[in-house]
Image 1 (cartoon, rainbow, N blue to C red):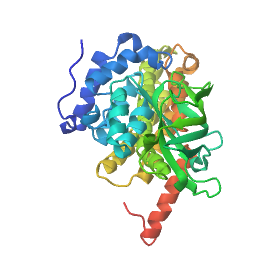
Image 2 (image 1 turned 45 degrees about the vertical axis):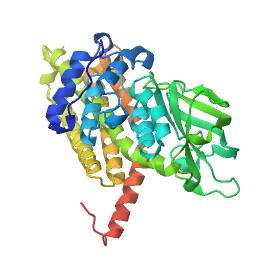
Image 3 (image 1 turned 30 degrees about the vertical axis):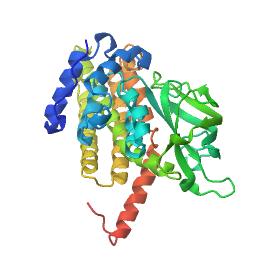
Length: 399
C-alpha cells in the first residue's frame, strides 16, 4: 500500500507543531527492526525506509514540489534532520539530497533536471559529490582532475577521493579543470560535470575503512579518459568551484543539524541510563557529578540549536550566510563531539561497547567536524568574513 503524500503546506505550521508532526510520523512509521541499530544501516538494508520517505515526500523535503520535494523552508529542513538523527533513523543520502539535487535545480538545464532528479526523489538513485582529491582536500581549488574537449564530448582524467556512495550512486557531480595546464586560472578554471557509472573510463577504486558512518561507503573514483557527453556540463564552464562553495554554504547547515540530532540522541540515552543505573544503592542520576555533566550537555545543545536555527532564518531571508553557516557548523559539530564524549563517560565501561548506542554516536559525531570543511577551515572562513565585514564598516561589526 502506497502511503498518501503530504499535501498540506507544512511551512504554515509553527516550528514546534511541525517538529511534533515529524516526530509522530517517524515514531509511527519507522520500521521496528531498524530502530536504534548498533551500527549504521547500509542503504540496501534500509531501502524500505527510503521508499517510505519518498512516498511521503520526505526524502528530499527541501526540494520544490515540482521536483518531488515538499518545498520546506530552511528552518523546517533543520528540524526534520534533527528529528531523523534523534530517532536513530537510517539517514537519507545527504550529498544527493542536500548538494547534488539543489545544484541541478539551480544550474541544470530542463533536460538534466528531468533526467536526474526524479530517480533521486523516488529513492531509486543515490547521488554523490566528487570534489576532493588525494592531494586536494581542504585546498579544494588545487584539484588536478582535467577535462579536455574531444569533439562534442569531454574526456576527464584524474582521481577523486572521499566520494560518499561513489559505488552506489546513479549520478555523481564531479569537479574538473577545464582550463589549460599551460594557463591555469585557479578556481575560475574549474567546471562541474554530471557523471553516471556507465560512462566509458569510469572506474571504482579504493574503498575506505572508516571509523564511523560505516554503512555509507566512501571510496576513490578513477577517471581514465572518461568520455562525458557535452550535454553533461552543469551550468557555465569555469563556474564549478563557485557552485561547489555555494552548495557548501548551505550544506553545512545540514551537517550542523545532523550533529545536533546526534548530540540530542546521546543526551537522551545518557539521561535514561543515569536514571536506571544504580551504584552505591541509588541511581547515578542522583550524584551531582552526573547531574553537572547532563546540565552542561543540555546547555550546549540548546545553544548550538539556537545558532543553527538563526542561520537557517538568515538563509530564509535571502541573506549571505557564508560566515553564519560556518559558525553554525563549527559550534554544532564540536558540541556533538563533546556531548557524545560525555555520554560515553556517563555510561562508563558500557559506553565503550557496542551493546549500547553511545559509542556509535561518538564515532558518528567525529566525522561532522571533518566533512564539508574541517573545524579549522570553518575558523578560517569565519575569521576572513569577520575581518572583511569589519573593514567594510570602519572597524565595527554589523549584527
